[in-house]
Figure 1 (cartoon, rainbow, N blue to C red):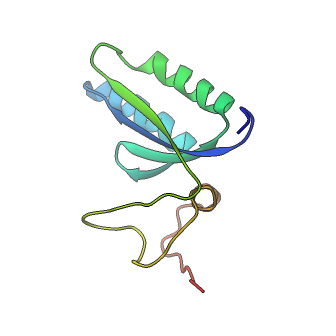
Figure 2: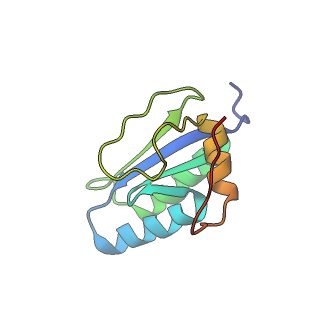
Figure 3: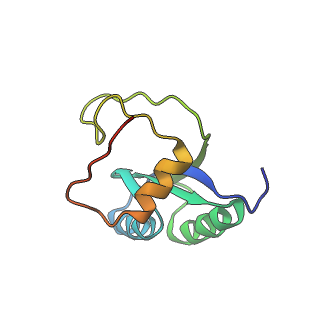
Amino acid sequence: MSKSETKAWLIAYDISQPRRLRQVHRLMREEGIPVQYSAFILTASDRQLDHLLADLRELIDPTCDDVRAYHIPQRCAVWSLGRNSLPSGILLDAAIAAKFLLETEAPEHTEISVA
């Protein structure tokens, strides 16, 4: 994979101070789609991810906060416990799912048909 190729990423964070937490959350809502309160999915190249991490580095305290970026391969298994945002039986390619989520303007109801 090249550094300019767009990939799916899972960004998760644990921020200890409420003010920094709000700042990080606000930035992440601009860049990605929340999958949980402190976990976001986004599509970005390595270069774009580096810029986002640099912006996050300016907001956090590295002595007590934690921010992580995980590359999500195009084909991967996902296990979930508790409330699920997608109906069971739907399998989405990570890149397609991220693209779909990023292009969708927070719909109240989205119907997905599975062939």
